[in-house]
Image 1: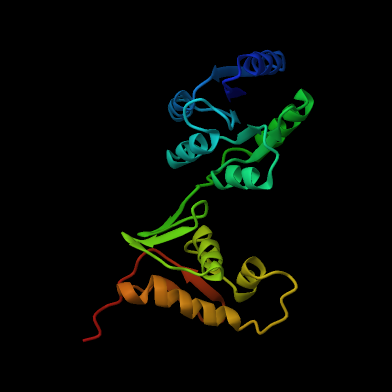
Image 2: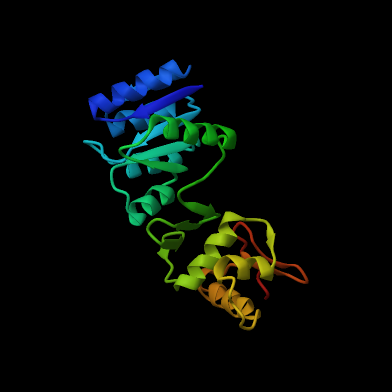
Length: 230
């Protein structure tokens, strides 16, 4: 197993390199975020151990750039800040797990082994279906060069549909993922919000990408310009 360790604190970097090498891993160590992006995009790694606080670009941005380059090696982030917001920022940037400093080496090793079992699978920080793009980190959505003004619920629905682009998603699935489990209202609220979404992502652009599949649910497919009805 080959690992990339990104850590600018020399003492911590040495401890990680020695400990991981003794466990049988091949370890590359860099101190700068820019070097980490280059290494991660030029070489195949089984996992990346990435510190959040770096002297040039922070770990969140490093992770975003790696994911944007289409590299999906599992990323374990190291952070001295055990705040919910920092953890959310790391996960939204494309990280898979985190360890808070100071940490026990045995815990870091166990988390790495769990990531190895999961393997490298695509987890893009931003989503796209045709020229429709969505960034969960910045909470922005666009159709081509046009910003889309979405409510929180519309954004949640669109994000789920885009993560399953081309798949047929049932009304029940959308309820489960965009409303809490305690929701007891009319399930047809999904139909209403699908209409709201169409009014924002399709109709103003002459598109029909958000389809209703009779008796099954909904599907978001690549851009489709309806034929001229004249």
